[in-house]
Image 1 (cartoon, one colour):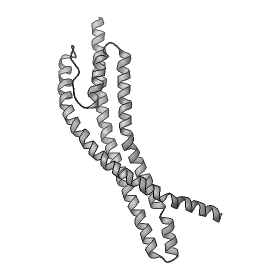
Image 2 (cartoon, rainbow, N blue to C red; image 1 turned 180 degrees about the horizontal axis):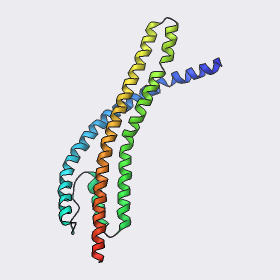
Image 3 (cartoon, rainbow, N blue to C red; image 1 turned 45 degrees about the vertical axis):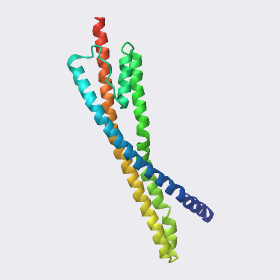
Image 4 (cartoon, helix red, strand yellow; image 1 turned 90 degrees about the horizontal axis):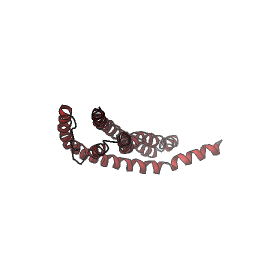
Length: 199
């Protein structure tokens, strides 16, 4: 049993370096995600003005041979695909499904940060506790203090990464839900106008 305990101890202490390295990587990635988020937010502000004008016009007078609005946001590319598929319900459904998949891929990185950050932070907390307790038992207070400092630092960094990932994911999910709703609205209008033409 003592051998098994030593093996487990060696494994856990051997994981400390990878945990710290991955946590630092995730922290830098979360900072980059904040910068990217700001750029996306500014892009959406410009896109929302174009879309609000277009959707307001469409709600009053219908599509009536209107062209897809142009812009840099991803939604404009999918709107153009919907307009190019006015005669194909299958292609419109495929466009909506492709948009959902693309948005899920964009959310994957922030979702992983929100989950991995706290998990790695907890691992970084628990791993140094073993050496800290050994230091306490042997009277080596300096070693215990050093290990406790590492434990608390990894917890804080892990929670910061998790919080950033969670907040960015929540906001982006609301954005993408709104975009998907607008795409469904245009797709339904195209279907409605096609049915009117048949009558």
